[in-house]
Image (cartoon, rainbow, N blue to C red; front, side, top):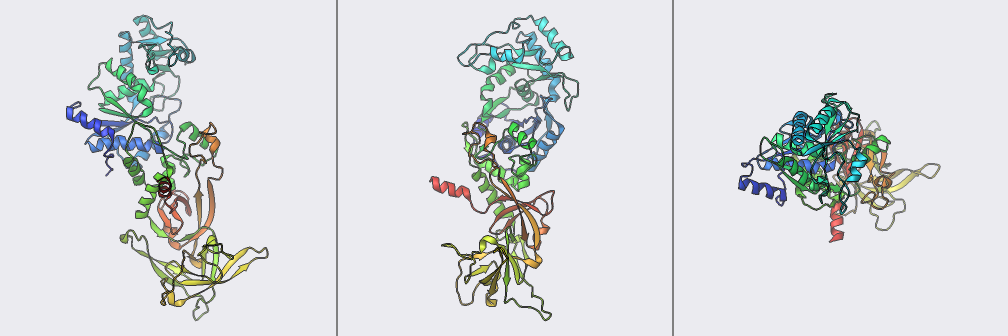
Length: 560
């Protein structure tokens, strides 16, 4: 069950008006058309949510159509990853399609435009064609081949298709207006020669359609009613409409609607830059938990439901803006607070020895067990038994031999609560020859089992702990922002110049035994520390998803 598109979504208003006017007979059909030349990222999640969510809300259909018109960069691997990521996000395409399914029809329509005198073959190279287009306020220059006869153009186009010409030697262009104020209408290229192997069509084609030529026509062939695109295609809409208006379409002409793309602070979604991070070894791959790809976010423990909810609730606008990454993290935190089971783990261990802890008849330390809720937010998750003994692990930061002002955690002579167990008071420390702290000694009050004193005395700090004899080792990846700047590249001119060289730290911690039972990909709350996802491939490795502190709420408070 997917979430509905936000009620203030202007796209809904357009579709509702079309339905009221009977524009498409009340039918709604959308599509999500990524190019299979990389992995989907968080920006795509917004488009996916809008395309699929809109269709679902209006009882329509949404296809996944792979825009496979560039054989040099596209691979089956990317197709498979796109399909899997969309399914993970919670959406199910009505049909899986490819632009290459329509290569035959697109070519027939290209010949049709040539026969109508609306397209011609240009022998100039790309650099020359680009220069002749002029610029804003600067008129274009007609190609010397613009007025070729129809028969000659047809002959050249067919020979292009037959593979007679070298790559880059000719293109097919639409014949529109070289002085149009919209640069997209200055005789755009429709076909270019590529002697490359295509992952689906092999060597069947050596001319390939441009995105503008393939996009609208593919929509029309499929029966798309509302072609929802991001805002950079706004200036291409007149060309989208021009092609459709000059072709014998099999049905209604689709309507293109544009909305602002989703961008975040401290984040880069450029496929070129992300590919460089992978190629240079800056990250471990496209699914590195620091990457903004859906695969990376999944590995890090972001719930699909939280991503969908965020994309839905922010709605769509016609104005580009950059969302705070902390706002998305707030949705992740909210979802995980309701669903993640709690465990205790210590990331930077310090040994705590309880000197007055009892022993049994054989002299061995007694082991007690405490019943602890797996998730206080969800009683149905039940409880678990957590071992407690006379030797524990606590966080190094939870003890200060010389406490600073307003430090309420453990220090010599101070009493604190050990979560769900006992009140303890620090009595001394052990150090090695170098003066490094190796252990803290304490006494416990047996009357405070469960964490409360019968005499009503209060303590100001509750600390988590792990029984040392029962602990399991865990490798924990701690993350900072991959980019230090809020807007990477804004000050430096190149986003990759703002990379954070210390974006990941791996520490070896200790955790209660139940942590070892975490399923691959399962997210746990390590109490007082944050949410951590079990790596899907490496046992014992956890990625910090988000901390417990709501940074977005703090930002809003400061701005308010």
